[in-house]
Length: 223
Image (cartoon, rainbow, N blue to C red; front, side, top):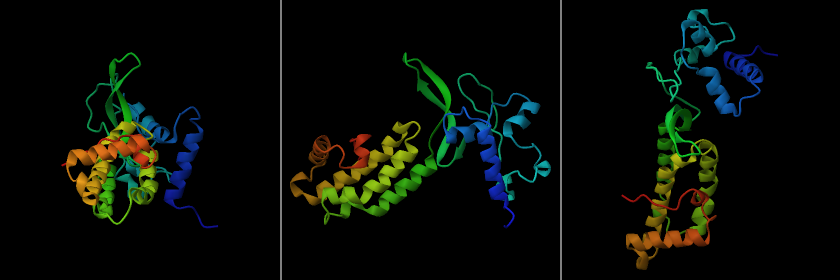
């Protein structure tokens, strides 16, 4: 059997650390917990990063060499940890972890270090939606449009909507805008923008599961 490569040994190392933290509620948050901790002192820094501070002193089971330059120590700034440090946010697996405003059950605002869909992920999804050119597909019916895009859009919602799902709404509203443009192109009697929006929202009320993203929002962002 061939010797494991650096990426494999690093994955094994992460798995071993995961086994040592059985109480963590979610794998994604577990990784964030392992790779980022509040910076409280030089000794804690080294323990918090789970890696030596000096790249030259990394063990053989450390990060692959291609990832060493990208390694950073992050300060998980929130309402309780208010220090000022160089790195207070990071992006991982399409999520950006940083301090964000939240509300407790009593409506009181507070800051927590939370993940949400990253700006780069939103841009990538937006580019993909533009390639569909939905507003030009007047040869298709509304149901056919839904069948074409639902698997992809549902996958995005299921993945990026795991944390702070409302952060996806502006992007999903852009998909609705394309549907409004499709209605205006398809039906001349609904060419007026307001009529087309009203029609789309009427269809959404009658068939709320037609499009996967309608369970999140039926509003449209028009430019």
